[in-house]
Length: 229
Length: 229
DNA sequence: TCAGTACTTTAAAATCTACTGAAGTACTGA
DNA sequence: TCAGTACTTCAGTAGATTTTAAAGTACTGA
Image 1 (cartoon, helix red, strand yellow):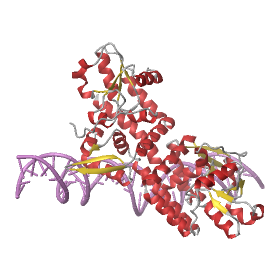
Image 2: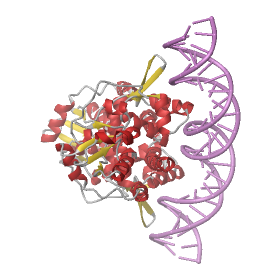
Image 3: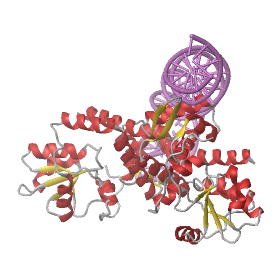
Image 4: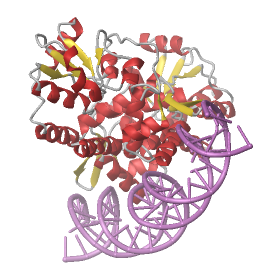
């Protein structure tokens, strides 16, 4: 009887550990983070995460076996997506626990931003309020397909790669707020650096779309635009 | 510049993965679950989780290095406790994700309960309401020190081991609801089996103290009673 | 039908992890 | 000071994980 109990407990904790194992690797966490922004093909994920293709495929398999993501084949392409919104919420709670418990996270971020001529000094709540009220021009600097999968209301899509050649579209007489995937994504940091160098008044919003959504604020989506180069 | 970004991302995801690695092992998850019930010594944890002492010590070290738990030495004993309430919340969100995504969890539980003459058919919300209103006798069948660390308001502490010899304390004319550590803890299952065999009207509440607390309901604590055999 | 693309699988090497038993450390009470 | 207890660390082994290159599969368009 006692041993049946033990077998039950062991079996249950083994199941829980399947999820733990899935998120025990930095590369898999990065893939999960990317998938929180929207569905992507294997190649796109590999390139974005700086991984080999075979390796990416195997990591995605591991995530699939923990049932955190799902794959769908359409023609040549296999598109991976989160299996459930709850997966993104769980990822966010891991991130928030890491921020709370691991001083290294803040330390690494602080050092990184310092090296990029100090981008941190902005009142976050004030900035959020401006973005919420549409009092500023909001720039989504992620790749177009991520913008399409969901973006802040009224945000203009200007992927970082296109920013330099599309500067003419931006107003000089209005504050610009750039955002990307979240607090550890560097796209908005680079965008703000470029904009400031060109005389714009630009700030970085740390929140990504999922953080915005988690605050209970609305998100807009376009018709899906996938596999765009 | 791109390689500095890559180094930053890698460093951040490595930090996140420290937490993932900590929860990637079934034994460590069981220890974390136990620690959600309150502080325990190494020996108590080892015994409860059915692990060797050296092994337990090493798992606790891993949890400590991920800063999920803290250790405090007092005399001969080292008492481990969760580093933060957020750790228990995170564990609960892992559990809830596993329940939602892994059909095996429900399957294993169903088979286990079936083998124990089917304890599942109880309307959970109705039962919760009765417990909340004090309309039933509520039994906490966990070890005394866990009861002391926090229990449902008005609950009577009768550890499972003492249940048979303390049956006289229980009312025959009132429903009894037993609870323990949560949905995957077997103490309450056994308690209900014993009580029903003796003619009591008894039910099992799946929620543990942490689940109760997560519903926003109040929890009572006694003065700490630690190291009780 | 054939070349090319996107992806998966296999195989092998390097590294990491989990567990055990034995030795070591730190503290208590006699 | 010494035996005993609670815990940690060490060493060794078995097994799992991660990564890469190479081979294999499935689909498309010519």
